[in-house]
Length: 265
Image (cartoon, rainbow, N blue to C red; front, side, top):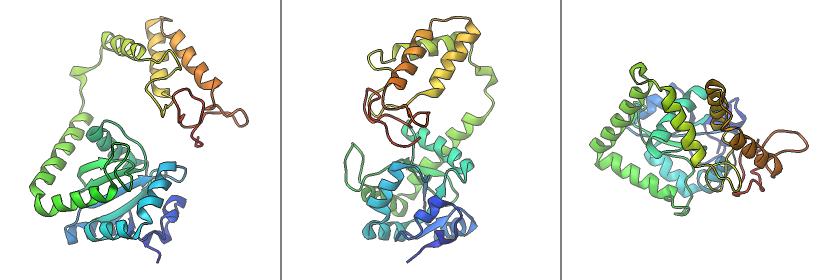
C-alpha cells in the first residue's frame, strides 16, 4: 500500500513510496503529528544515487517487522538532500557533532521540537561492522523516550547548544597563520605515502584538504606541499577511481589502493 510519498516530485522520495514505513515528506503535517502524538521523529535523509541508501531501504525499510516498529514509535520523515540541502546541512552538522563523521543515508532521531538526540548514518539489520542493529536502535530509543524522557531532552539540549555555539562569531579566536601552518603540517604527517590519500578503505578523495593545501601554499608562497598534492592526484588518476571514458572521479575507492571504485560519481 503506498504511503504519503506518492505525491512527491523527488525521484528519491518516490522510490520509497511503496515501503511499509508510514513515511511523511518534510512539512507541517508530519511536524504537527509528532507534537500531537508526543512521538519522536525519525528523519532519514538520502539521495537517488546513494548506494547505502538503497541497501538500508532493502534491508530495513522494506522489512515489515522493522516498519511496524518505526510506525508504532516514531513519526518517520524522508528527505531528499538534493531537494532540501538546507535541512541536510543542518542535521549533517548534528551527525558530525554526535558521531565524529557524516554520510548518507543520514539517520537522525529528533524530539518533536526538532532537536536531535541520537544520530548515525547506515544501520545494518543485524549487528555488524561494529554497528548496532537498526531494530535494536529503534527499540532502545523508543524505550528511552517512554521511560527516560528527561535524559533524552537533556541530550537534545546539549547538542543544540553545541551547534548554536559553532555558528556564533568567533573573531576573537580567529585562526592565525601559525595555526594554519600547524594544520597543514599535521595533514602532511598523516598522509599515506604508500598509496596516496588519507585513512584506510574505503578511501575518499579529500578535495577540501587538497584545496586547503593549495591555498595555504599560495598564501605562504611555499611549494613544500606540492609533492604531496601531486602524489595524491597521480595516485587517484592511475587507479580505478578515474573514469577514462567520461572523465571525472568516482565518489570513493572501496579498497586502500584506489583500484576498485564505488560506481557513483
